[in-house]
Length: 205
Image (cartoon, rainbow, N blue to C red; front, side):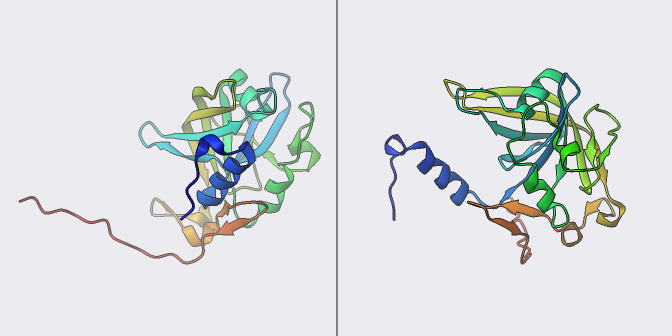
């Protein structure tokens, strides 16, 4: 078994261990809007559920060299709002296109011809190319590292949109959803085989 001392690893080695060992990772396709009104869309795979009630999700946005905030984190800090558009087999190509390093004054949504739909509770639009949207208001930003290396964004979900074909009896149909996850390198993954393992129940003595 490889034994790796973190103190002896370079940044890229740490990165490869994290993205290769912690898989699959769900992808947050985040839309936000700047103070100047520029709509930004970008994917982030350091993303997951944070709390059920209140309903919260977390996204970690790694900073650029020089501890510079990325557009998404800065927009959310400035406006306090964003939308997470979920990623599936139908939109993953468009999601990948929005990962390009566009200038801050260029909207990926406009540049790529994506469909901006109005949200109900926040100003940032949702994307018509996605079939599940979580409208969020900023709960907290936690700066990680010294100097700052990432912004951990915790958002409270204030409204959810789910396409009719995916929603049945209060649940989202996993197979119809066709979710896509992030792996290492340039690789993505689908759900694949699904199996159930009931949670054990301990009998009190």
